[in-house]
Image (cartoon, rainbow, N blue to C red; front, side, top):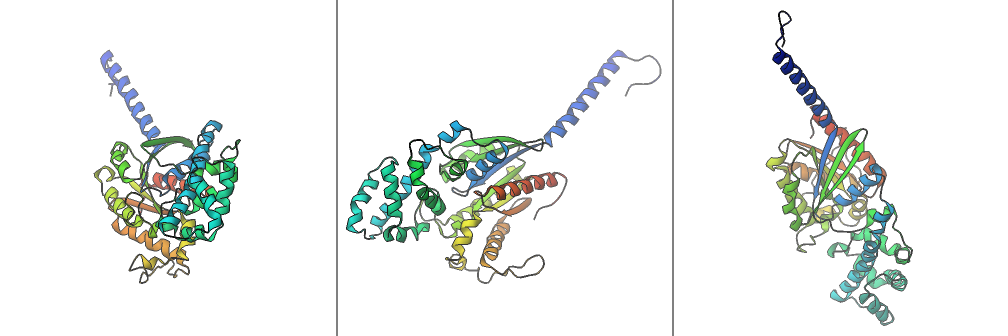
Length: 360
């Protein structure tokens, strides 16, 4: 502080002005920092991280340019062809009989290296056969690119994919299956807030790279695929995917880098979970599921298996959570409106945390 009486020292004035400038800069920096969010997408492979990131690009970053869409053309064609080849290979592996009239068509697909118009027509014809449907009914036992829903989508759209002038749509890109390798960052602005979303590969071989992303994180978005309770990992073909997700969640939430970081748990692929839980009871895979009592906040009992199943799986992750704050959302990454609503809630949640609100 400068004295108001007597002669003013020029050095004092200079220091005072410099301190004022520094304080103003610090104030501006704090203000700007509050308008920046850096979120890390984590989870096991096929949990839907990349699909969610794509949705954010469509919703908040003007979507995909024509040149970006073109890059997915061959990926989608390969997804389609690979799914049918996998189904046909499994027929042989499981000794499922293929009727004689279909064998030339099967051989043609098995030796195809690209999705031609002829191959696309044969794929759709084979899809309707009993032997392919027998395999697909047990799709949880095999590793299909894009999973069951992706396979159905690729084959339904096979003829369109095979056209010479085919250009993927935004929805096609959301459905495209391409394993994330390394680290991908998406930056966009929402309501004058700068958001950086970091997507990393979820397979075991990719997780050693995660340490490079653990700096200045506002929140960790951890995705779990609800429908994978009866599936095994692609990496070893024996470990239950839900159990792997639980172990990873336990380890990550207890990491020293995230002591003061909020965790957002996405129970994803709710649409596929709703379909599957009607056919495959959760009790077959979790011994305590049948005795699990699910009570709504208003003390009303859940009336359907979907709500009970979601609540049960949520309880498993809440139980092993080792962090500071946890927020849980049921999501469907291929549903744009759902992603839009959920992301708004996530953004508001992170801001509430900054103001001192608590999670679970």
